[in-house]
Length: 350
Ligand code: HEM
Image (spheres, protein in one colour):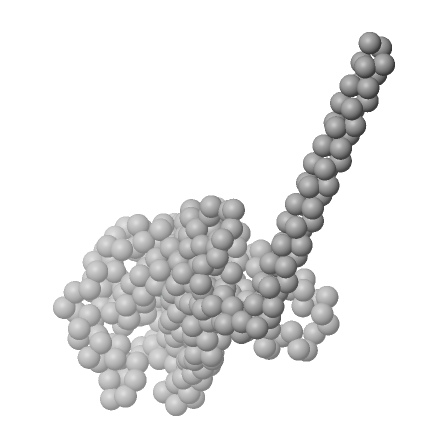
């Protein structure tokens, strides 16, 4: 009996061992098959990619979408095809034409200075002062001017720096400069938006066009040609100043909105949104920079004694009569514009 049990037990163990060995062998063979199949597949894939490499990469370059686990917009697109059009438009057209436009405007004002010359006061100053710009207006103007000009300078460095500055300065200095320009531009630009909004609220009413401005434009502001010195009528602002104001507001709104899209890329903007914003931002900025080349010329040297008003807040009576006659008639009798007697001015000074 014991022998029989021993016999059956040995047989059972042998069968178990045999089946275990067979199954292990079978699974190893299957694994080997899968591995070799995979290797085969990847080899084939490799071959295919190798053979169809150009087509594959052409498809990628043309913006064909692939697969990625990221769910964000356009993450499956490795290369955005419209990016190439954007790059060509920006680097080959807008940048060089923009540089040409700015240099052209600078050239024009230099030419105007030497050919037409500044517009001088036709009569002697009377010495009587007329209040023109309040302290708030002047603070607003100069903050705006500083912010705009510094943003223009850093913006131009971002666009043209790699062509004009990078080749002539050490690499580390260039890295610091371009990083500083980018940071300044990104962080100070919201201040420009605030100032633009404040300027719009404060000065829009006096900048509405009237019939008088048509005549002012017809006579070229009395600044050139046969009309030079004719002093066409104007209210507080003349036609040119009003045009400049609306250029600033409309151009500024485009600059601010496109800049906001570029500065805060956290609202699901697509690459196309960013590229369009970038082009709008550069175009509007270049237009404003060109416009303000003329404004700065006129403010600094083009019209005698204009700057005094924006610096001290007061202008001479002769300047007021010659350049803004309608406004002068409205304000000449105000108490603040009456000539101060010796004694009252001495008291005022104290
Ligand atoms: C060195 C730079 C600048 C100078 C010397 C200058 C000079 C002047 C002067 C003298 C006036 C007063 C004109 C008048 O009393 O009728 C004025 C007005 C004005 N400026 Fe400037 N400016 C400069 C830059 C800027 C910039 C960069 C901006 C805007 C981004 C700007 C915007 C304005 C505006 C909106 C007015 C008011 C025009 C009006 O509606 O009457 N200025 N500027």
